[in-house]
Length: 226
Image (cartoon, rainbow, N blue to C red; front, side, top):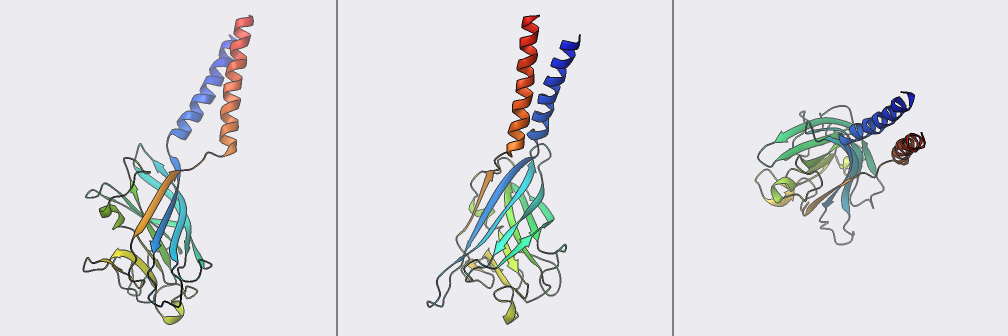
């Protein structure tokens, strides 16, 4: 009886780990906003957002989107840590979630209140954000143009590259008239790319799985010996 109980416990441990890691799944995300610099005396740099999030495939929900937003034209030496996921909206027209992480624990970014793709870049509220798109069928799938059009960022902090000029640094694919490559203060933010990859499990996860498999093997050998 004790042998059976021990084997059952080992199987339950391994099964519990599998269930725990089935959903949600951890992913890494990288966005690149190509900035066209019209002053030819300066090189062209990209604005980058690199972060991570968890996606629950059972409920189609995203949690813990956080990351770092760097500044174009500064050699990407200036960055803002976006630690607050405050918006997640499902867009049925393009088949996925539009998820946004913020620098402050507030969605108030531009002067006049609120954040919105296509909003005017009036210097505002010491906040910054980056918006990613997640395909709920397959988060790692390549984005369509309609999905890319949902991506955006803004940095309205005084420490930002354009903050001293009283202007938010912003970028998205379209402006409010729908013209490609004309969105935000960084005109010509196009092309925009987004790459989402499954995060590599932590070493502790492998260690737990190997321990569970080892326990099952040990119990099986004891049963055969008995």
